[in-house]
Length: 109
Length: 118
Image 1: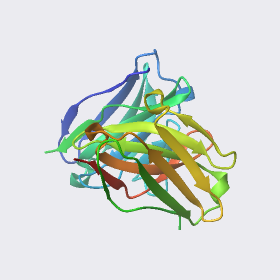
Image 2 (image 1 turned 120 degrees about the vertical axis):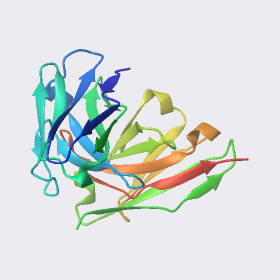
Image 3 (image 1 turned 60 degrees about the vertical axis):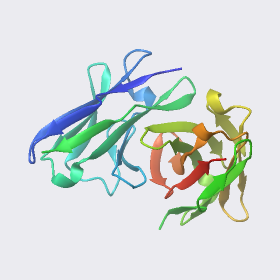
């Protein structure tokens, strides 16, 4: 069973830039893992921000971007806004199943 | 507009089963897959499995094999997830989510709280 690892928590100042990463116990994360990023605010259902590494939905703010960084998938927020404070989950396809990371709690302070 | 509307909260006793529905609208039902994901209180997201709607086949996470069934009704554009032999650890919010082939995850249901308590 693949284990997907994320930073448990990060803090960023309003207007700043932060990068969240997503690693896999099976090795380097590639586009073949179809990395997705989801945002979940308290009491709400998750919302998909990024799919297939770097593709945005119509509702995804432009300040969010996805990429591969070294051997991990990455989500970068540029010009962070207070409303970006949330839990962010990485999702990978590995070994015929989908696996979520443990989530990164992003605090905007 | 695309919507996934789930059934309401449930309270079940240990050992019972629960069936949660996810009604789709605003798109061609058979053109997309539906996943089921759960979230225990204060915990992260856990993938349970997928139903390939057009083929009526499923792929379940190993942890849930033998205890979960996923079905669909094309006449009502509804997907169902049934979880049996409930235990307190199954208390969670259960979500359905849509995927187009190739990792195109997009819409989510609003979630259904299932509480298992004696």
